[in-house]
Picture 1: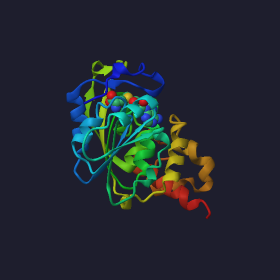
Picture 2: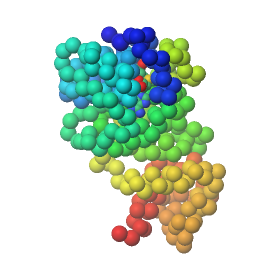
Picture 3: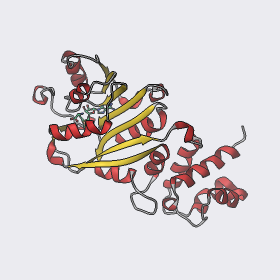
Picture 4: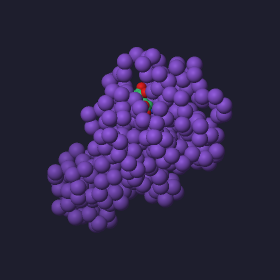
Length: 272
Ligand code: SAM
């Protein structure tokens, strides 16, 4: 059961509210999460609940929804799905959620038809900061999905690609047309599934990686030697050799691994 969108206030553009109306597609999105009775699930932006009741019906161990819109949060409090698990409704901005609290051990899964205006920063945080995350499924604008799954040497390849592919393996599950939403967005959406890389396999410093990515992609048309000479100085050749980077390459030519190796050099050269 989904709450009645006509009973509520008008959809708010400022909160990226495009509500899914197609139960088949909603089921396919929830299927991608592969919910088991051991899972602890967090849904971001439930709105009237197109996904919420389907998630609950799959019987996770624990289920929390994070909603910034006061109206929809209180509607879910008043009309929770019957049976276990109890639905925890949190009225909050998901950007403020302490993702690092999803510790290793329990099986944490996060899902959402994300508000388009905060989708990128939300994914940037969740997928890098939640140590115990075992899977995430997000519906986002198709164009943003294309950037996330892009390969080096393409126009779509950028900072978001490098960052997310450093922490997880993203895969596009399927595309969703604008016709199944109310109100209709202008563009196609895509559902992506993310499998996090186990934390013990990550051998780079996230803060240094974030710095290198931002510095490089702010000047994506320049050569790597131009971008980083001021920082590495005389040790530029050494840094590039350690990462297998050509001085004349541009940021979009480097693999995520090469950015990680540059980040490690950055970290090691900063005196403690
Ligand atoms: N899940 C519903 C569906 O599929 O129809 C609604 C999806 S709608 C695209 C995005 C939802 O996220 C809205 O309910 C909106 O109020 C909520 N939202 C927007 N910004 C948010 C934020 N920063 N934190 C939590 N929820 C947010």
